[in-house]
Length: 435
Image (cartoon, rainbow, N blue to C red; front, side, top):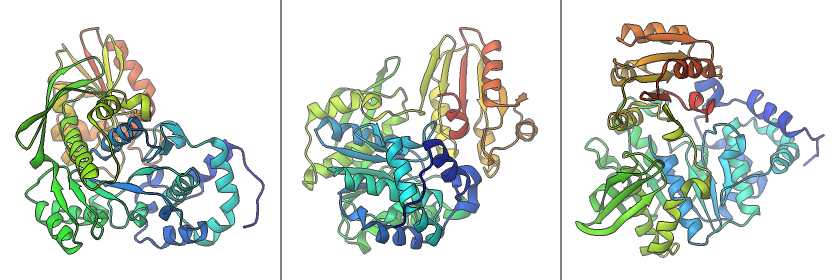
């Protein structure tokens, strides 16, 4: 491969973000409908994805949280764990980590410089290059296991060239219908594409519309299947400022008492159930080993071990300011239910979204009693604040529009008292500007 003059790290990011099709930035135009590019890239790179073991996660909501939980427990058990997630908040390198350490800037620069001629030939998207970079990094660093989250869907997602030790599908909700289908059954069919022959699969939530889809795919692949919520019940019993303590039952019997998890959100019960069932499958199939002490140690320090940010993240206490990247119908429902459990006098919502979001499903979820501060996320896909405000007003939501997310947050902070709550959300891109 011909060496080209190296850019700086900032120049490399500019190339990745602005000269390649990127869904995070431009939306549907970046979506690729087959695995041809990633397969061609992988072939040219020496098939890196076959050089390490992996666990593959898909789902509409919860896959990022579940991936970080799983990585934390496996790290606590002594394994060298690769973690690939998307999108990122602040730093591109958040996507590619080993034991919580970001891939180095030098590695990013060298990878792009070395293979730029190849990129010109294949014309891959930003996501395809990032997946190839992650898999190459994990292979070169000889990870014991890589926990890999899909980007969009499953069947045609670039990560789906993996032959994992375990597949995990957290849940199904409406999101990206233009690509995945307009019914839960169709969306489930796309997510089920990560189920592989004779490879165990864990489904996080039993849903009437999707259960048969997953069972049918698993049967066709001779893949052992289990539904986490049919095996495990995790009940939150109390909160600290930054964590939740659960009691956990397995098949109706109390299994884990006072299990502290480094996230402050009741909705993580579902993700915890998915994680624990996955760990039981991992142990039963002798994929990896762990014990209760490493389980507790990993879950108690998820953020420290994996640099987990952006989900129900407490930014300040007075007023209580929460940033949460839930952005679709299912995620927002659970986050807003959590908000109802917090005592406050007034709720201030710093809110933004992307232009291709189906707001007719989002607006009915949002509390009409809140004061809204509408803002455009700093990406081309961001919906203009004035347009968002007008549409919100038609749905009975009252507020003002602001030129930027930081300006909207400053306005909320100026209005809020110490007895109020400020919630920042609607899009990962909005949260990325404040965490």
